[in-house]
Image 1 (spheres, rainbow, N blue to C red):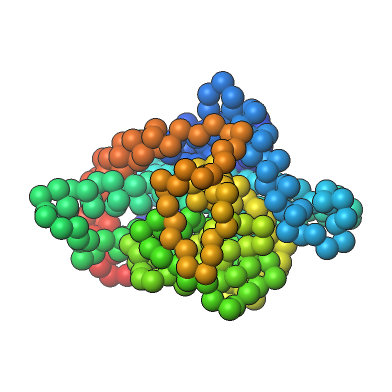
Image 2 (tube, rainbow, N blue to C red):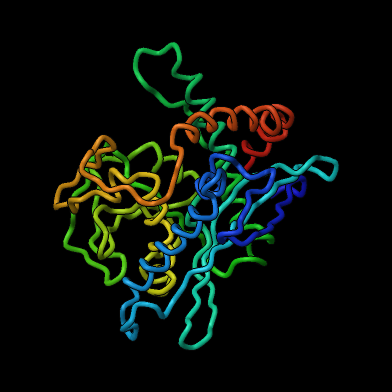
Length: 323
């Protein structure tokens, strides 16, 4: 990558005392939980859910289901385009750590998990919306996601990434409610049954430009598949405990954010169509403002446009074209 661009990485612990930093995207899922009168209760309940899920999946040599706990760090990535430019908050992800209370060991889990990006907000809430305003049918601009994808890949291959993380990222997202998923006979002991979608989604295409492949699995004890975006070999590059740290963390968040799918009272069958209007589901004891998140995504997309895209448009276009 051009020496005009540099990445810097910082992190903060995500626990019941967590308070979002001033430059944290307020639509970021974990930041949403950490605001309001019930912030500490929200965080405590979410972390308990993660630990309970982890121990249920890591059940071997764990008779009392209390051997492990998960610690989380919020990893923030800033990008500078030159020495005089102000750093722009590029990406936020989560990193897991696994604490074994029997041995006293604390080992690294997986980086990625949740994924937040101002430029992605700009693409989906500004570019895509403007592109389709006067059109009768939905379409996607030809270069949609190109810049974001190249920025992400540049970070993954950067010295900053290599110095901070031992393995490539895994990002775990919800399934799409406008696709149908078919269960295959492929079953992994931790990831569970693999599902295949009936067609590619815009999210898949967007993440493909980030250099990420996707596979869908429904872990044991789960009611719906999760989408796992990764670089190399999902099944062989990571240990079972590393995978469990991601599953327990991200399924907990999905139960909070999308209970209609991930806290449904019926388990996905061989043919599964997610439904965000499903009334047969249970709510967690964690308060989450989904409407606020949708509204703020537009505001933050416009912030990215004003603070990053417009001021450095010519530099970004030149770099993206030559990459």
